[in-house]
Image (cartoon, rainbow, N blue to C red; front, side):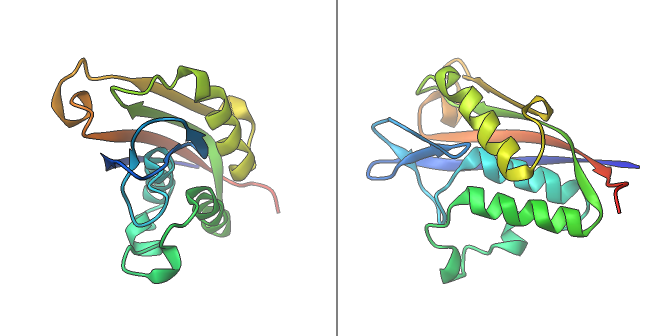
Length: 161
């Protein structure tokens, strides 16, 4: 049995914050604003995984009103989401994610992002796809006001005891 989920997230770009995407600290003059580390890619991935299993969203599991999640490392939250999915009897079949950002260029960091996600989720890197695109200077991402990400997760029933 398999289940499919979609995740979406967006964060505003601001001065004085790190730009962390896929667990990679990317050198840039601005970073993403959020209660946690604002890793928009990982947030979309987590929402896709949770959505596939009808387990709510990251706001339900890690509310931005909870002080314990202030500045949280999204990779650690991804590990918790992976465990929640396993406890529900599901593992990752594959994840396909797209980051939408006008700048910086993300191509040099994609393989590290894929590796980070696969390692935390306990799956092979071949099961994780991360892509990046611009919006040709259109909309809030094109105007460099923020970064967004979409993710689709195929979750499969874990047949192992």
